[in-house]
Length: 182
Image 1 (cartoon, rainbow, N blue to C red):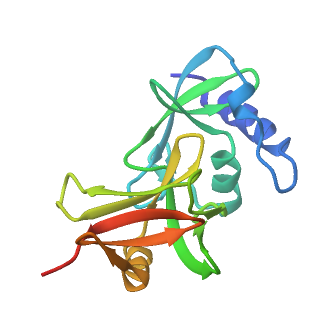
Image 2: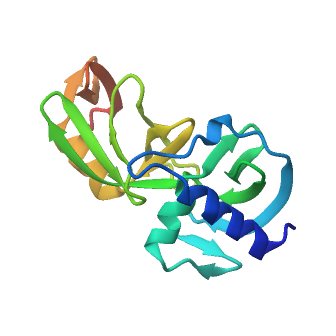
């Protein structure tokens, strides 16, 4: 396990270097793996450090800007450190959807605004625990947001039918949501 205090300080410093409305270039950073840090993102979107919820929303948003998905899992990345964390499902939640002309615009629990489309597709799988639909939106570089149930219900309300299934269009792309209920 990495030195927690030093690891958190490095992550905060790196995230603080992000442009005001941009993200740090974590995809360009290739530091050595420094171990694991006891941060867990629960299925319900809550972030925990050493078993305690991280109650400061600005800190969670800051950490989210240096989150990266690598082949071996999720990491908080700085120019000099790479610390593995645990993500139970998707690292983010889509908490709102709005129709804006031909686009569906989503807001995540960490403040990302994403328009669904070819570069940010929606996908629906079956939840492995319940068998219910599990909808996701690609936010950035492999990081997804799971749509909260009310957001998914809003999409179903907006849905069109095509070839026996429901779906939505956004930015010229068609996203199936599932079969038409009987």
